Length: 422
Image (cartoon, rainbow, N blue to C red; front, side, top):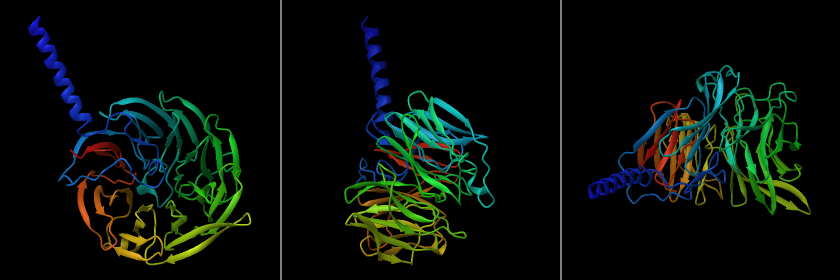
């Protein structure tokens, strides 16, 4: 009896130690981190649960890697689960995986007969929109612009809205890339094509349309939900202009014309900081815009403009009072600018990458280059200072990374991997 008890205790301890080394050494305990969608909880790339180590490790440890399909959608994390929207063959798939192991819990399949237009073949046919999760529901947008709601626990389809009857081609030229946002009881996205479309709000429970605003064509940028001068509003950069809409009623509040023309696409998501919206466009520099309200009438003032750097496809992030981004000038270079004045503080070397996905952490910027290199940069105003660099993929990495407390999720061309800092 004593021998059996000792053996049992030993086995229990061994299992506990192994489990502890996986969960505590590389991941996070369940419910410690929630990453609900594109650029995190506030859609600004700020990671408030990660503390930079005193000394960055020389290398990272790959805990698991699974094939999930093609596409640029961000992974989502809630408690001990990871959700990934991607494409396999002719279908778009939504998968739920165990965070600790990568083991599949459920998988849902939706046929999406999308084919990338000429010039976009290298980006593939996978979804470019990032899903979002709220109150147990996952909302996805297919490359054809269909909005679907799924039960996060079971994967069951709850509802789907397809605007192709209203807009025969319900996506811009290279496919729907805007990432829906959830604000309270509504999910909001821009539907339509290059020539016509609308910003819409749907009830999260039923999918019923609550309001539809405007007739502007869709761009590739994603909407923001912000409170400006006490008014909750949706800021959306469409094909024609940056517009703001009252969140509750859908009424237009203000706009700043910045149209998409020729090959200059409206792609990056605007950045909100200290009462200003920082908007950058391909070959059009960066603007510092400040919305105002006087006697009940809204307007937007251009506080500064600079033309030395511009945002093409990469969305910038804030650290302190500085904007960190990636300009397509000189065939791709990192930069930092002062958000109060627009002054460019530093620029990195040219020919760095085609795209960079950013996150912001205390005193640092995490930059995932599209060649699979992850750079950690000091958030300084003096010069580009790299403190660590890791190769986290061997194929293109266009999807935004997700930073956990002691690890990160990386989606490359076809797979999703979990890396640990220990």
